[in-house]
Length: 355
Image 1 (tube, rainbow, N blue to C red):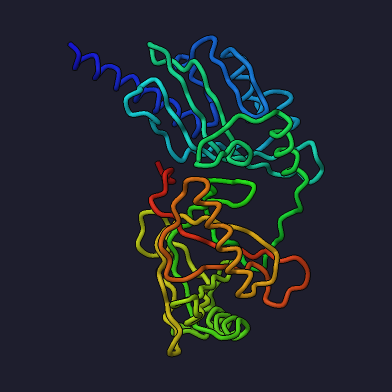
Image 2: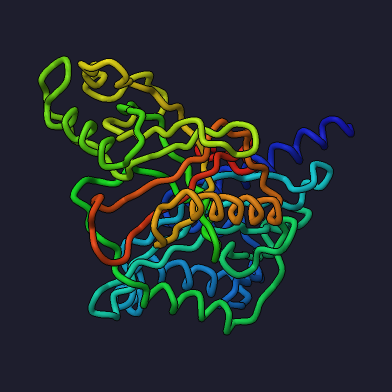
């Protein structure tokens, strides 16, 4: 009897998980009321209410299915990355990790707001959702990786701050696609696909830029022009005492779709010259810190140390690295503010994309 009851409970819990997946994928079109208590409570950094009708009105507004929603919001997407039981012995609690984005239409420039975080669900004895508590990585994340409630003013500040951020630059080449897994006030966590690239060693970045530009323009084994992605990805190989042993730059040329071994349309051409390498990178989750300071060896080293300390503080585990990785998104000699980044791969990432 006990085994049969356990099997029944596990089946009901799986049904709730499947419901959550469906609702996230469709942005609650429809919301499946049968899985919710009539008096379900919801709380996030900006909202607090009770009742399944208010819950539905909230998601319908963000999705643009209400009058106010049609005026204020569009392109709402809720991407599920993971769904887990925080305590394996407690089948009445679930936690999801997600990325939410939407466009705010009430401002002339129609900015996009992006939030990442977790939802903590509480279920009753009938496996109906009785409470949902949302936390944002940008304001609720606490030392050690847990979450703490914050005031509505802090939530409002994060939201409004995104609406008035500087407009993102348009680059000459498309950006290598990624899935945003975490957005904090100091760094991001991104899931990048596998890709094929051309890599060269260099002493001066201008030399590497010229070589990679030549390959992309058709100076390769097939004589075929290529359309690279930004950013330019650079790595510094170091030895004992931090001594620099070498520098490498690569340009991603084609990304590899999930589950495939080569890019759509086939691999990129082989390079013609000795020392130029065609490389394949596997899908990787990186922690990323963005800055505008010039890309000097000292700046890269300092930003790398700062990011590493932030990751350890937040309970994430940086992977062992053979080289420090940093990137440049803008043209080599562009004037004005630039977008530079340091990337650190993460080991044993706790919320794998693609769940």
